Image (cartoon, rainbow, N blue to C red; front, side, top):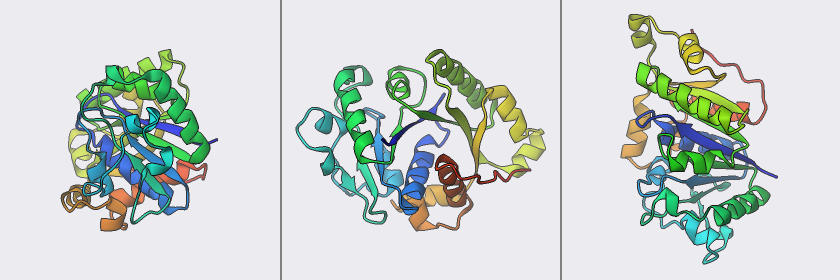
Length: 246
C-alpha cells in the first residue's frame, strides 16, 4: 500500500502548493510512482506549479464518481511516474462526497507509492478532508509570527484528530532576514511545537519556474529550492538525509 501525504498550511501565502509540486516531482524523479491531487476546490493552481497548465486534467470528482478510471490521471511529460488530478472548479469542499473520496484514496494507495494531497490553506473543510485520511502530514509555514501561530493552531487540530506523523517544513527561508530580526529555525520549531522535516530557501527560481509554467526541477534542478525538495523527498523515503541550516 502506498503512503498518503497531506500538504497543509495554517494560512495562505506560505508557498505550500509550489512545495507540494517540488516534492512530488522529486519523488517521481527518484523513480517512485506518485499521484499528486489538487484538493483546493474552486481555487486550484497546482497544475501551474507542476508545469501542467496547458494540459487537460481529470478532476478527482471525475474519478471518484466513476465517470473515468484512475488510470486516466494526467501523466507528466517530464516525470513519467508522476500523475496528476485537479480539483473540481464548480463546487466547494463541503460538496465533496466524503465516502466516495475515501474509497478513491484507498484505491489510489493500491496503485501508487505516494499520494500527495495539496489541501486548501487554512483549517476549514478542505483541511479536515485531506488531513483525516493522511498517513503523514507536511505542515508548511514561513517564519513570520502569523504563519507560525497558524501552524501551531493547525498542529493542535491535527493532534486532536489523532495525527502523530506531522512534521513542519519551513519555506521561503531568507538567512539575511533571519539574522536581522534575530529569528532561528529552532525558534520556529519551538513556536510551532512540531518536528522539522525540511528547510526551503527563499528562491526566485520558484517564481520564475511558475511564470514559465515549468516544474521547478525541470526549470533549474540545481536551484536551492529544488535541492531542498530533493532532500525532503529522501527523508520521506526513509533515508537519513541531513537538514542543513545555521
